[in-house]
Amino acid sequence: KQEVTQIPAALSVPEGENLVLNCSFTDSAIYNLQWFRQDPGKGLTSLLLIQSSQREQTSGRLNASLDKSSGRSTLYIAASQPGDSATYLCAVRPGGGSNYKLTFGKGTLLTVNP
Amino acid sequence: EAGVAQSPRYKIIEKRQSVAFWCNPISGHATLYWYQQILGQGPKLLIQFQNNGVVDDSQLPKDRFSAERLKGVDSTLKIQPAKLEDSAVYLCASSLGLAGGGYEQYFGPGTRLTVT
Image (cartoon, rainbow over all chains, first blue to last red; front, side):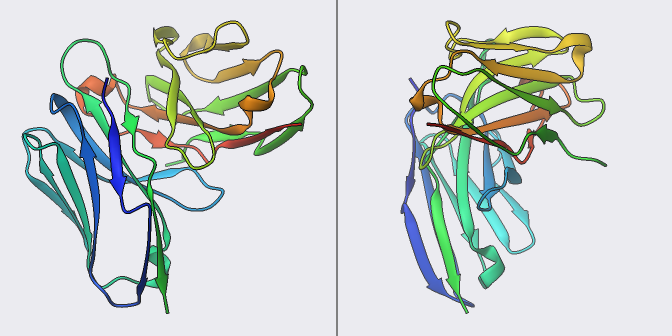
């Protein structure tokens, strides 16, 4: 059974800092990995999707890497801003067969202080 | 492009009552998902539809939960009777095709259910 762990559970940083959020998964046979952002009382917003054959994806100040063999992904946020404050979730989709459901971690609650 | 719409946004009911949630996916999206997110947890998939057929409902508590997607567009999720542990946010998501195509899932704002 796939398990996804996110460390740390919460992180508080001053504005302008670069930071890294970590995600690990137990079964390396994944099809893709997706990072989401969730604001309080809101749904999930997809940030980056990395296919299993890719090593990283970039969007603006965000960079996500994937090391499938070791079961790890990181989300790097450059020059953090107060507007980045949210919960960040990673999710993996299993590879092969007809099992398409995403398995989510519990998330990292990020607070960026002005 | 309009996003995934859900209603109601909030619902408070007493245990043993019934409740229904509605979802309208992004136009043209064939795949629709219902997730349950308990406070402090990541979302858990309850059911996945491809058009109007069920692809995966292995984690749906079928003794009390039911879902349908008539005409392959809108969907409703029902709980009857509700239990205290059903208190959660119910998220609807959609994607262009089966997630096996690598298509991203787009989420609605969710319905926050409180069972007292």
